Image 1 (spheres, rainbow, N blue to C red):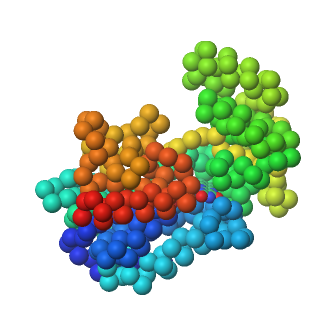
Image 2 (spheres, protein in one colour):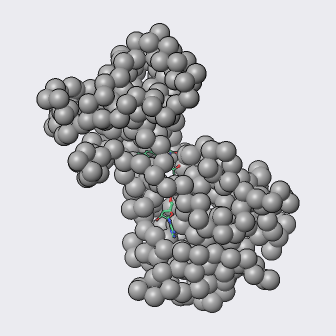
Image 3 (cartoon, protein in one colour):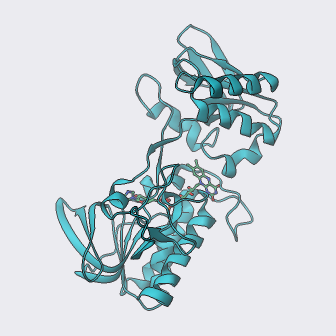
Length: 331
Ligand SMILES: Cc1cc2nc3c(=O)[nH]c(=O)nc-3n(C[C@H](O)[C@H](O)[C@H](O)COP(=O)(O)OP(=O)(O)OC[C@H]3O[C@@H](n4cnc5c(N)ncnc54)[C@H](O)[C@@H]3O)c2cc1C
């Protein structure tokens, strides 16, 4: 859906990101009689855009795709266009605090614009690192789009019982993910390090502990680089390796972590970043200051960008908390 825009200079809320959190915040702001602008790079940059069947979304008896859910959230916002501008594709590039609130610069239609808000909600998510072959990420998309290669334990772990699973990754994060997946009772788990030496970046003690635990659970790792994928018609994750060998698995799982934590705007605004790289907030989604002075008045963060679980109901809840807190306490 193209953006619906009656751009004003100033709003009650500026919302950066129009994924699940940002769209819910826009809706809630409109219902509470506020004006808001949602500055969004576009749905295809939402983490859920490529999620084919999400089973934990309240109100959906059958799994729903992320794409469809975003469409529905946008459709729910559209009737409020008198109050809420949805500007997309637009990319926020800078943000700062001012006397009356906040200013955000964003690129839209080839120009840089500035919008002001009394409150600012950061909801521009995080970006997964995508498994690549030959330096390209496109080859994995057919498997990711069908949910044969997965990215989120909390979202898709329930599909793993009895399955053979390949975890792609080479560091301690991938090793811990492989161990975590055993909770779902897969038939087997194997780690594909894709040409990287396994656990080379881990501290010696951590490496020894992880190797021992993996061995105890029969989790092996193979180090040759992946060169191609096959088996999509059979809904299998087939992998060809640089040494000429081929393997097939029921499912693949990315253990590569994050490509971009989107810390730039939060840092510009003086936000604290927690040990895992997320924006630190209190339980009302208020952003905490890096200098330890407590919540930054009027600055909120919701969804995957903030410290907490990366789930859509969580994105909705944290967005609701932000807008309600601004209503009750700040605006
Ligand atoms: C494969 C997969 C399957 C998943 N399955 C499930 C599931 O089954 N259930 C579940 O609850 N969760 C699932 N998730 C997690 C879910 O997708 C995220 O928790 C959710 O998308 C977070 O919402 P968000 O609004 O914080 O971020 P996103 O939905 O990622 O949206 C971020 C938005 O910010 C925009 N943006 C980014 N940078 C800028 C910028 N500089 N300026 C303007 N806009 C910007 C993007 O265009 C995007 O629209 C899954 C994730 C993946 C990857």
